[in-house]
Length: 310
Image 1 (cartoon, helix red, strand yellow):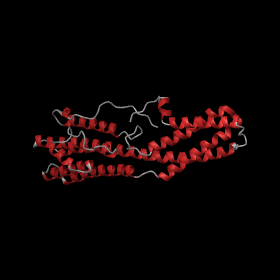
Image 2 (cartoon, rainbow, N blue to C red):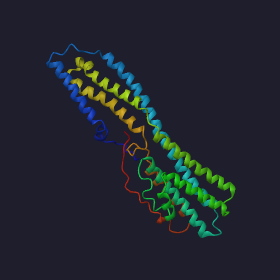
Image 3 (cartoon, rainbow, N blue to C red):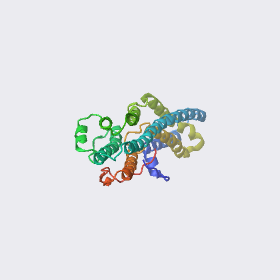
Image 4 (cartoon, one colour):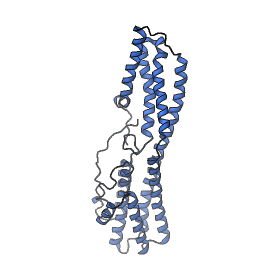
């Protein structure tokens, strides 16, 4: 996800356009009924709306914090993935000495590093409910790609392939047992990060809590014109719209942030992070492995969209 400092007003209020239109119609209707049909007996003290608005503000603040915690935890997990992908690549490149059997070792190291790139893209699509096996041909050899087609959980299958190659490195004597344990610990970290992301994905934010807050916001908006009309007259219409928009925007922001893997503008930017990981790993491969590393082609769309947090 890329952020811009200047967010268009049309984008912000476009998220609550329907609510604002209905609020404007409702508050204007209340004014005309109050003004032309002598409906002046119904009046609600401003104190009532003030107290209710304060309560809703506290609830919305709590909900926004909880939603942001879910989003931030997802970002922390993917930050850990970035670090451990770099660490895993460094370990593969430095633990396996290419002085003997250079071509074979080079091929195996390059295969494992490319496979790690595939794992990142696959996990990103897996979390967003997309096809996790799509566009991975550039990172996997034919045998790996054929085996991946049979798997239900693509990122899990790729990590298992890494484990098999790690065992091969140890059996061939290309790494010692301490290095094997270290590399296996890094692979375990990847599984822990994946499990943490799946936990966030599959743990639904309490629906009743969301419904109750939404009903309170609607109730507050319905009462607000009756509290302001005696003081502001026709000017209560824009005032109601302005006050209501603040509550609607905060509520909408919390709804979007609570699910960071739903392929929305407010998602954790997993695709962008995966591209960054690929660039970093390719740089490390160029430094350590001779040959045409640029043949690793990223078949992801290269144009990055600009999104805004809301």
